Length: 188
Image (cartoon, rainbow, N blue to C red; front, top):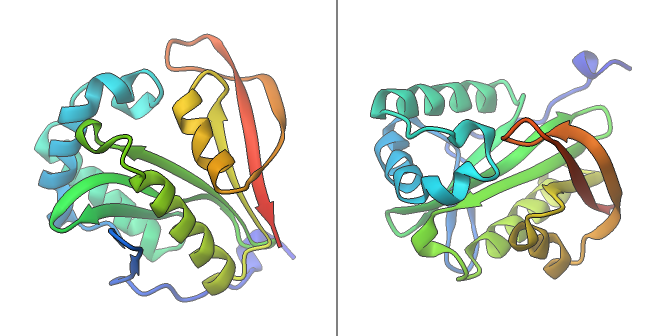
């Protein structure tokens, strides 16, 4: 069965996944200002790892990004999420590289600089993984990270994801140089 023919479960547009301290919400253009603020604060840290963070986005660019993310969410091509602690955006995460025929998902994430090292990403990734397995019938959830990004690698290790291996020089990093990617996964 092709991925196009695979049924995609309904995911409410007002989805909220709650964890102990966070509420993870589907993207919305109304969040653009707060997401932009988090990116502006964190651009130096993000620039090292994220190709989309090579320059500070304008508010209009952040709004367009939230509109695109919402469209992807509506069509269930990807399920991006905005991480809130109260009314403050602490980062973004979500389910990406979705293969509904399995179903399999990849979790990506970033956190704003002032909220780093507080366990928010670990908490969010745990909640998202549980959502994928329990609500979306996932058979596989994976996390891929540059092998040099030790802080990012600690998240799947802390949550019991298995290191399946390292893909050597499988893609280019943000500087255009070959990078090695650690692949972590949980399966059902």
